[in-house]
Length: 167
Image (spheres, one colour):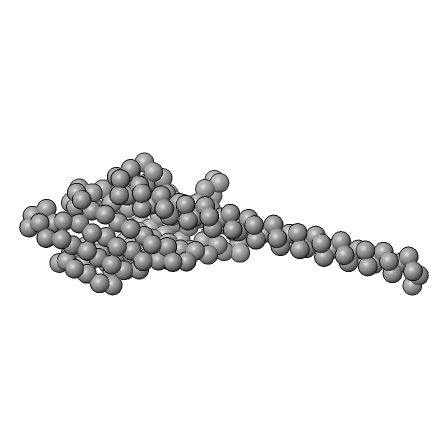
């Protein structure tokens, strides 16, 4: 093998390494951007729910959303919307807070999951008692049509200061 062939092979290896590292770096930057987008969407949940901005709130839902809690699962977007409307109607002062603990984007790029702590509080309209549920949540996000939407949400109550823990 001549000197020019060895040089060409080294140069080819260097270019291949550069391209590979560039792609890895670009992938990491893209993944970080998606993490930031998901965290912003998650914050929209808190703001929209607590201000009763149903347009923004329901805008987070994927058409195939499933929402599960101790009282059961809502397996259509219409059922999920109806369940949250019931929350607003039955608990006029209800507050809901998701506190993100972890978000991870799938290497496949179209799915992500978020886990964290969840708290819901309200005053019972009948007896004026204060109610609070604290637990863990898990969200599966799906990226389509250039937006992250919630495909699945599971809320598990772990402690409760109310008689409606499973509601």
